[in-house]
Picture (cartoon, rainbow, N blue to C red):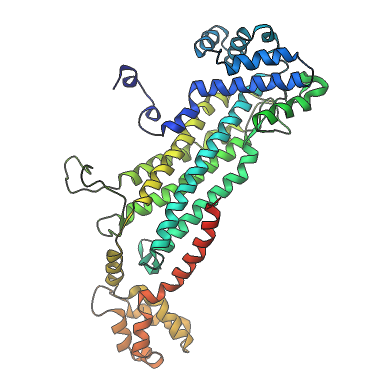
Length: 455
């Protein structure tokens, strides 16, 4: 570890998050986006004859040539105590004759909020790719295990059989819904403004609409149709709450793996490098669900980050500055961590170890108790009132760990034998027969998700 690395404080700088995503939020990247906005402003104004064309060329040359140095911006900010003015002056200094036209008609939030829209758009593209990768990993498991019987559990207790593939199809469908939500949110998120001090565009005169549309066209953004001094914070609150929804799904899936990996269940486990990986510093036998637990931990933090943007929706009149500081913290952290947990979950499900034999053992351990619904419906169809059939099976499944399996109890019960033959009872208590519905449903879900994830 170098001296610089040893002085790092935030775990996002060295422990969590991918370098690819971290690079979106570096100071250099953020300065670059702000300068792109200033250059787009100058170009739009020059196109409309508001400033000389040579001035726009000077500004573009300074931006594209990397002439604005972060060190100079920092120096000016210490002097001016204003971050955007420091950028404006730094750009003006290196733009020659065109420097006098930098930031003409604009206010600080025109630059910062439009640059933020660029950042959020890039971030959304990354997270969308993450969801696609996770969705495909889950669909692959659903396809492989479409007919693998597993006991379904409700309230932590054995319910009726499902297939493990259906469990994965349910998860994949949830992931794809989040991707659909993001596609719906993005047009509301990739929105900037170039409308001046209180959002009316007065500083750009009669060509305000044309200036704003020209800037946004060059940047690939839309304009907020009705901003104040800032873009409406409902947009950012919607996005961070969407991130919270994604983290909720991630936590749910990670918790499922953690539970299935419990020693007493042991039906599935996340990948573990037997040659090198260590589960415990003292208990050498441990194979802990490390990635899944990490996902749960970080997902809790992402959900916590959803609150400040909701608070930021409340502004004093046309704007205050109470949102600014926390957004600098919340947005990079929430996005980086969401990418991190989705990437880790994809690793978990891409290498998930599924033990179908153990699933069969667990079904057998219920001694047929998971098949009561099947018997109840059959008895009702043969003439026994449903309430009586339910009570009959409740009685037959008392003390499930003692005595014969449900099938044998049913065969020995006179009331059951009035309605069902032994061969029918055997068929009705066979989990594989009951999983056929889950298999067929899994196939339908997979077919739809394959089409969705192809795009």
